[in-house]
Amino acid sequence: DAGITQSPRHKVTETGTPVTLRCHQTENHRYMYWYRQDPGHGLRLIHYSYGVKDTDKGEVSDGYSVSRSKTEDFLLTLESATSSQTSVYFCAIRVTANTEAFFGQGTRLTVV
Amino acid sequence: QKEVEQDPGPLSVPEGAIVSLNCTYSNSAFQYFMWYRQYSRKGPELLMYTYSSGNKEDGRFTAQVDKSSKYISLFIRDSQPSDSATYLCAMSPSGREKLTFGTGTRLTIIP
Image (tube, rainbow over all chains, first blue to last red; front, side, top):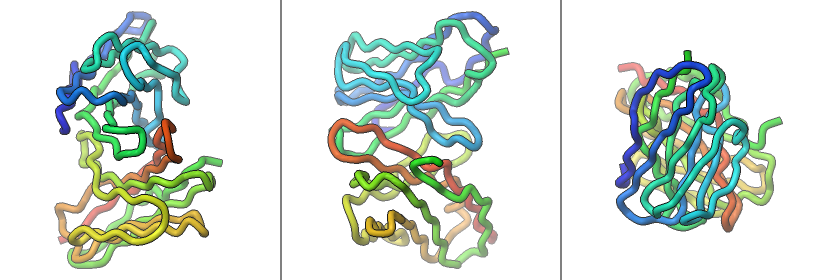
């Protein structure tokens, strides 16, 4: 798992509540990513980070925000969860911008 | 039209067969190509990573990239039931660009 830990692994939450997912890495790599995976859509990039306090939006960023105050932690926040955000969320790291990505085990989020 | 197209399958083949998985893409700037394997309820794990065109072999797995046709392939020889998984292709241009994924092909190897 390349030293990547996602928490929680499973979560059920109610519509309208805020939710924060955490990605922790032990290797101090600069590049971190949050993806969501849905049937028929594959993996889609939500937000990414190239270092502490250096983040940018991906293709499906609406309704999500991120923070990276430490190299090892990348937080994904759903400001007000909606049923359309029910998905499996994956964190990934890259050693450099041109290398392969390594993924965490995923967080299964259900919004009811 | 998606930047990366991948047949979702499902694909079922008998044990020992050669499996061919493919992706096509439209962005000629892609230079880095990856194949991931994903077991049910697990995160994707990297199988193969190639740069630009050509072939790369690793055990029973061979990755091919044909940039002129914008087509990449993953071949699995002597397929095993443990190869049953979803296979995702991914690619990116150089620099700080993000990875773009195919939707994945679900493969089942029948004993």
